[in-house]
Image 1: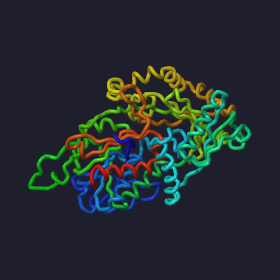
Image 2: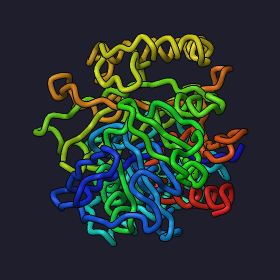
Image 3: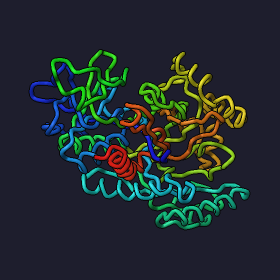
Length: 463
């Protein structure tokens, strides 16, 4: 198994006469700009492709873009189950361009994040996409946190993160006048961007290079083609049939799956190994009221504690000028359950019966209870926030949006932290590449990840 990545998104294309075979894909403008109409692949109809990418988020669009730019003669299609692009993890994340400080040296996370951040800044400059390089402080508010902070600083240096420095109380005040702390790591290279806008720009690049996107295409079956009718060669040239919930189908030679919250189910659907299983964790954000946004200039993060699986609540400025506070991390009872009472019996049973969640719960019981308590009572979250900015009160905050993280979990209850992709055996398994896990910072790393996927696809499928 080769380590690597995550989920995928789709752009849309409207051919002049529509799609043959009953397909349609409504084109959506990126930030007010109309989609360019593309002629698509040169050697296949819109229902037969050399390569199909299943899924519709930022990593998938980046990968589709990388593949078609590298192999312009191939017909490449993206299948997206929603009517719009990049609406789930890509459209619900914090928007932070991470620097790469947190991750284990020499891991794919570390390498791809550092490379990816540089590529995202370069891409945004080329395309005129707005971003802010507002920086981040990782702040120690207790004496016992300082050794962990210093170790994190050394890790960041090993990872090649630009511009890191350790600062004391007086310099913390210069960067964040309302933040208290004993010591902090200043990460000036951290930024913020609207990742959905970036993803839609990837989609436009893909289409302009000749790629196709079919939206409203929820994959139900993946199987080998039966004998071709009427002497057609489609069944031999395009041996894989992908069918959606409406009975529509496309055929292709090779498949790349980047299905995010459904990556385990799509793998199982293709006859491949469903492990690692996906466990959805909802992250709820709070909003600082507009009149209080002056309290926060850039990103403010706590010192991470390796005993716990997530980073903890932090302060995140957004491109629209708002300030998000959070997120927490609680089990979601539905894979796309953005509201506390969203529920799917199938999703809950999968989590209980097929994943290592029970072991994870026992390993992190007190942490989980604390997260649920904070989710229910705003005062508990505010008490934590006041460690950093004492002026914040309960009356200064509102409940905000939520996202769902596709957390891969092994059967021993361990979080799968690094990027992972694999294939399978047999007729379909030899023609498919599954993007199994791409945890944060996948959005930051998307362009770097896309190069790795394009390399793997080229080697595996002998393109």
